[in-house]
Amino acid sequence: MRKFLVVLDDSRECLNAMRFAAMRAAHSGGGVAVLSIIEPEEFNHWIGVGELMREEARERIEVHFEVFAKWMRDKQNIDPELIIREGEPLTEIMAQINEDTEIGVLVLGAGTDNKGPGPLVTALSRQSGSLPVPITIVPGDLSKEWLEAIT
Image 1 (cartoon, rainbow, N blue to C red):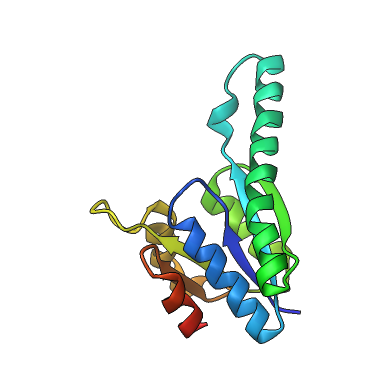
Image 2 (cartoon, rainbow, N blue to C red; image 1 turned 90 degrees about the vertical axis):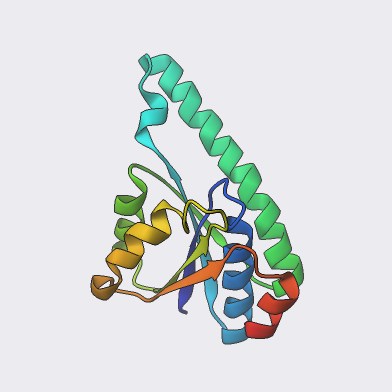
């Protein structure tokens, strides 16, 4: 089964990327892998404090994921898989794509403010010619109705 890999973060545009990935997977018989990355600079504290912060980050990710997962299960009949990695986002995205041969498309949400589409979209767009899978960039301000129409 081909999977859509989508990155879960705290950005507003993440919502449309999740919706797009789930709807495309539902219409094409695919699956959804949701990747969340804990960046290392969050834990540059004493060892005990760092471990506690890491565990709290994982718990926040799992709660956030469950909101999207429930919608995917209930509305799209898709049971997504959660992957949590620690490290630099670009490195971890590429590692996940290289390790999981079922990933067929990387789905990213593009920011809508005047700062640009976001650091992941910008960095991965520059590398798009050498990536092992295509990237789908979903505009953060697309309506739910338009997303349904194009998926």
